[in-house]
Length: 270
Image 1 (spheres, helix red, strand yellow):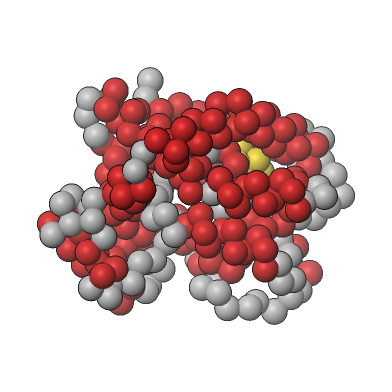
Image 2 (tube, rainbow, N blue to C red):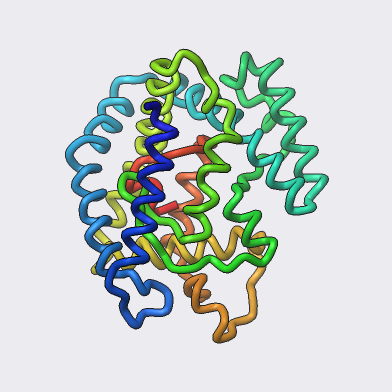
């Protein structure tokens, strides 16, 4: 079984267990007991395996090579971004994304060089969860997925679409695909090493910090950074209060340009 199919089964099982678990009175996080348990598991997994691998990767691999890895997977993620921009009715952004893929794939040596950005073609980041949000689908409860990190019910259900609109999901043979997915994960984790350390030092309750930052950032992305008026019906999409440190952490992570599945911690602060 390849990594993509395994990830889909994990998120489906996690969503089912979460919805069947004990609920709390927190409207943003009714599944908090389950989520905290999974968050703790992800945090341990990160400390034991993923963070050490990312530190070795960051210290051993030359910076230009790390940039090339990020550019390559970022170029692949632009394919799904283009699709989602078209689905959201943002035709100009979608055409820019198509142009980026064409330029970077041809002139940028298969995406290793980001010629598109040098040429002034803006980079966007859209996923199917954002598209569903744009269509008016409520986020549902906050969920922490094993090995994948922060999500919501809507974003969890959208994740298989994101996986299978990524060209890397079709790379053959499977062992190359799985190796590339592992490199992608480690590369994404390496980008946020300093930011993750900042969170660990600054947050009184790391779980709440990560959750609120994630929900705020997702709401901002769905509305393209525009502030949405607050009402009682907004409780399922998280806080709207300004939280500058979490937002800055997210921006740092996303500048890597890599899409797809990240490390547990990288996904949580996304």
